[in-house]
Length: 276
Length: 265
Image (cartoon, chains in turn purple, cyan):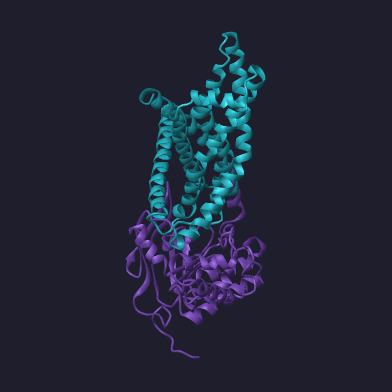
């Protein structure tokens, strides 16, 4: 499929109004500023990958978008609702259109996979138990775990657990799907499996997907647009192509995997060690 | 100056802790109201009943054993003193009143702190570490309603029951001492015990046990919800849950005893 190259820096099928809109977001823990004035728009139907090194604040940003923690200042609008100062009930309404796959999968260890996936359906819908069971089986087979529904999370491998958490995230057919480090701690083959699962969800449901990751290969594979974070600030936002061709020294360093010490010589490094 | 600073910091930390507990209590009470079987629709029966079994039924043998030992100890210690005064029959009053008013609720609560308070804190703490609590919130489920309320309802129902069992065990064990020293039959012992006891003694003990149950659940869950620092933090919070619960239970016991002493006798 060939499409005309668009001048705008976002995916061509994305609609005009941003579904997620972050404005002047600041997060401080004590004296430490983790996020410093973040502005970011994510449009309906696109896959946004938030990249950055460890400690760049990318997971912190994702937690604010989930509405799990409140920012120090600034706003997060999801479908024009400001969840940074909404009441818990209002945030809960928004959460029903969001599905989240956590870094550690976060499956409930005391429940079987089927119960894990069925939990949001049982809690938030009045569907009959037989319907719920059918939907659960559907979601699990969508992620390739159709025959594992009666297993407990402890009986699964890391990759299976991750896929199960995706099944739970899509249980309510969310409009927005968030991934926190989808391939962290997985071997390359399983990580690639998760990537293809994300791509498959993207083409099947046209969901808005936000992924936080530091894995370059998977980021370039799944992203429509990317956002580079460093020390709590956005270095660049753009399509994968724009990011790939960026000349910003820090982005180049990240993409070319150059260690920090290389910036200075060995003497500088020794000096930092001996300095009190 | 540093002394002043550390005193101030300590005070603020304590105030914050009490404040956090109070907020959690309020939210727990509101959620329990939503979940109660008469007006609410969201009671988690399966979870509540499971917790009732773990908190109550499974604790029954150890609570009864410890209470029986305590009753016997009380009878022996009291008997040794009262024998010299020639008032050994007062051992019956001693055992009956102190078990129902004081030791029954207290010992039950302390055993349950060790069994269940620590377990609550470890369970919730682990869920915090593995992001399960965040996952609950991300699914628009209130962790207080989902995790705390079933435990709270189970505790409010089971702790008074355990207390009654402990009272019974302690008093019956006291009867063994009386049987061997005074040659008093068991039926006679029971009648003398019933004469010594007032309903008020039992009711005030049960009121205490409800307060203790509230402390156990809320401190245990609060420590769990506020775990930081991974698995090590879970261990730390479990210890803190037990120590703080026991301290608060003794403090509440003192307050209730003083209240009953002055206003209900």
